[in-house]
Image 1: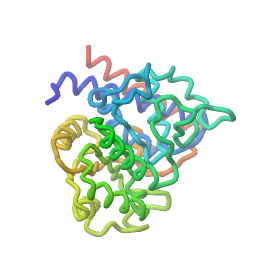
Image 2: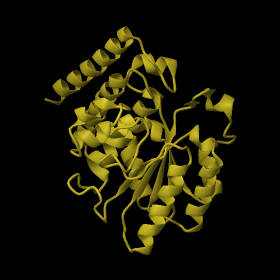
Image 3: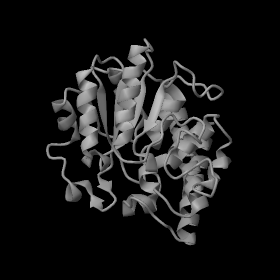
Image 4: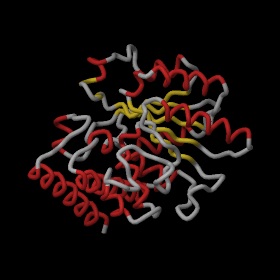
Length: 284
């Protein structure tokens, strides 16, 4: 169990990730703000507390893996990696520029700390399953964490990978389903309903399923990870998150991708900076 003081430190880390994510996307002027902000808390917990990794040795054989199958949320991962010591975070302020090392969708070949190239929806999950099986064959006990969007779960490949993972009982694979309720063309319910819910679907495939009612709560996430890591089955954490979490304009719009005006950018950055400052003052 993580102590309350450590929870507050991780909440502060999550807010730093949110602010840097905004700065990274602001450097481009537009991008996937909503789905990047909704996973900041889970990223803070993974890189701040749970995962075994070394920024000085990013390809360390026994490292834990973090795979962003919803690769369009790359800015949030870049912010996290930068703040974790893989590179100066301001280097990511070249998002999607010509010859940048920080494309809008994550690329293992050009960005230090990115474990797998993703972006074509569904494929990251299959790759993560392959890593988990490969690690087992090499007697490596590392965990593999994979972020999947609820809209991405419309892809058939997601369920092929779910079946594969359950069949081989890859207990070291933990899927984090960013269940924020919205995708490119509207709500997930309107575009392609998940029927009885994503949890029920993963359970039907033979997975251990944990519903995290507040997927933006570090405390709830920490308790869920503790349960997941003790399971003998692969685990799907259904994170009930808020798209655009921490940015009032984005929470209200629920936009998948956005191109805010100059005034809106000023408002969003100010809001994130002020919240971070308040949290730091409260931590003293």
